[in-house]
Picture 1 (cartoon, rainbow, N blue to C red):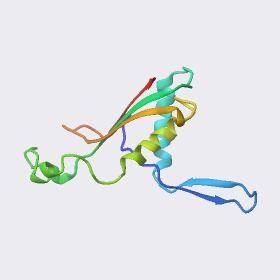
Picture 2: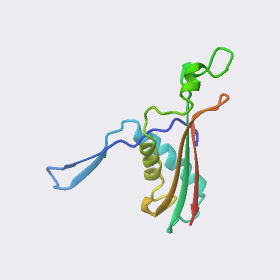
Picture 3: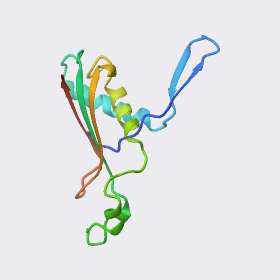
Length: 140
């Protein structure tokens, strides 16, 4: 799925004074549009197939842009790139995964509690590659 992955933020809850019901919100501003993109792609990928209702193994590979200082003008890896070969900056890998898990709930699987095995990777885009996420979901 193409696009720069956005993390799910911390959840916040409050009581609606009119109804007395608890409302849970996500404080990440870019999370909602990103989740909508993921959900739309999942609907297309499922192509009318029934969602999973069993134990699942998932793999999410988040490909993020390289920082500008990672390459020299000739395209070779710079000293900064050699020092930092993996994206250790924000956003947090688990929050990126949580956003994907939430977006796929009810579309690809009944609930994200069905995930019993998860492989997560955050890597830099290479050779002009655009930011994206590779998702693999398999029944156990």
